[in-house]
Image (cartoon, rainbow, N blue to C red; front, top):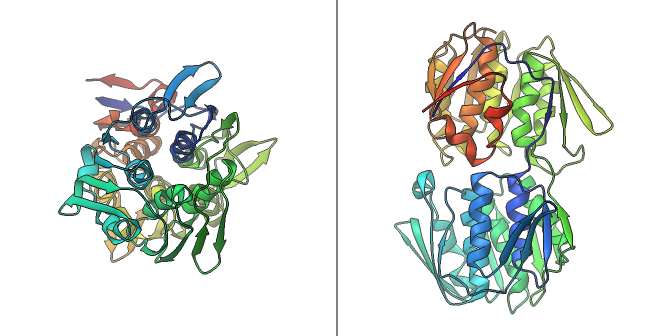
Length: 416
């Protein structure tokens, strides 16, 4: 799909999409429970759709209604062939969680997920009683056995998602467990995992030295209803839109959220943007901005929209943490450099630093999403800096996280 985004986008109010990160965690927590739970505000992203299907494959009955999505766990037969679509978080949660059901599972995915490394599982699952096989460290995966629990160390330099999956699974193991963690990045996402576990009645101890103690033989006992909060990752595109183009009000965000991408407000402070909260609504005003330097190591999903923000600011901005961009839907560092160069923006990648030489105005051009939802949306917001808009190829990639995005944009031209 090709979308032509005009330069004169006119949006004054928007509701943040549902957080797919919280939604996927909540789906698994409800799937591991013993009683029905209605999940509200799950959203309709591809990633959430795939994890709802995994829930079904793990024996849950799922019914949608005006109230939300009801998950009735452990009522149907289990499928031994699981497919997570293109959800990186989904497959890393699924693999450890499936091992609590015992037996043998084949776990696969599609698209860019097939090129993401998965061999981290080999460093801890066998120590906990589960055999693990992969295709040279990539999909498909095969696990067999039942998660026993015990003491294990996990290196999270590739992703904190491996840790999140293990933490959610261990309460169902036979033994008490102790997990020591090295090289933890994106720790806010682990905090989100622990928050959902706590909401569903799981007890644990998280110590300052990245040591987690979890009692075995626990049960997920969730509330009758669970509300998924709005997504700071998706809202970040509108937040930057407000700062560089036109005042906007954003509803549906938690001011005290644990989400890593709430750090977009820290960047606004650095570059002098004007924003304020009023009765739960975030208002961002178009501002005179200055260049910024920001470490996005723990919130790498912000890189694309930060590139757009930097493009709108006269001068040189720097974003640190480029090494976190390799194993996303695309190699985001290179993809951003390539696509924004078509718009006349110079992006240099020097070791772990992205250097952006902004000059407020961009050229109109045809860009490609690289099958990356965040690059597609960042380019859409960048159209505000052009005279005649931007044409985005493979624009359907936004369905991964934010299917409603194009319907919110003012008067886009959409073609196959």
